[in-house]
Length: 372
Image (cartoon, rainbow, N blue to C red; front, side, top):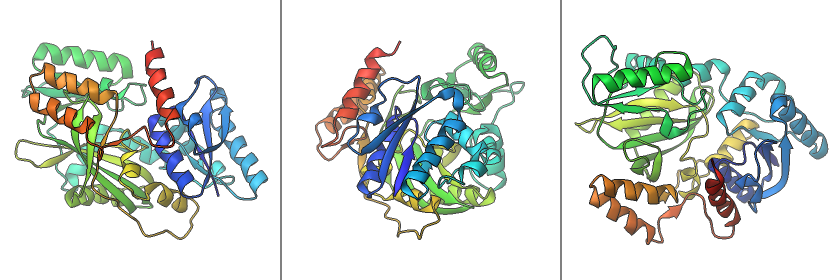
């Protein structure tokens, strides 16, 4: 049994590598030649490291999968982690499937779920609660949120994919900013002040095979950035909404459905990430067999019973330290103290550092100091 995990520098890749190795799968960590010292290369779960040319795109991945298949006598499973890699793989899926196991969305499914405005309109037609979308010519209730249709395609980081605007001048500035970057008008939605939540799924041809839901505890930046701390939880209503969309689009692959609560506590669907998402390591630290389910489904093997794991809290350091300081700066003493308590709580899991496999975390931290 062999798996190829791409984009080994992403922190999400570590969870895949460790999960697969723990399941008895031989793991090949793969990275592009313009990335130096990817953290995943240093994991004890890696059996082999492969570097491919970014210019080759899928050609490099096809050659790697073919080489592994010929050497082992069986098709490896390809796990595309980065958004750009997934886009390449999706477009060449029919060719790649001749040399590897693969379970990814189609290009049409990627285009649909990457389009925030289209997703919200369709979800609304299915009876799923979504934020109010504003036309810039109408009266807009401030604060509001402005975000590109698909910031990932423009290469924007998670904290760069939105702006909270509090008046007309800020709105016009945000519209101009995102349109200049993406070449298309951004989405303007009502701002929801409640907690954030997510439902992560593995699906095949419209059927959800596995799911892990979470609630966001802290985020950085503290005004709506990605999770720095989250907690695995049961959320049947979120799973119902996600499953409805998965079935309606006959979706295949992994995806994270992101929600936020309104003033009444009703969770509204914000967007869908049809790829490996930032909090993917929670599927590992909670003890689920999510990744091995994905491996099995990609090869059309009999699926093991899904173990949804236990309720557990996960943090990312150093981003959670930054979040704690951010909450303190904004006068939220409770969130700061909660973060401090979690740091000293041995039951709170670090999504990146694991006993017996510390080196990738050290490499990751070093890479943060070297960023320009």
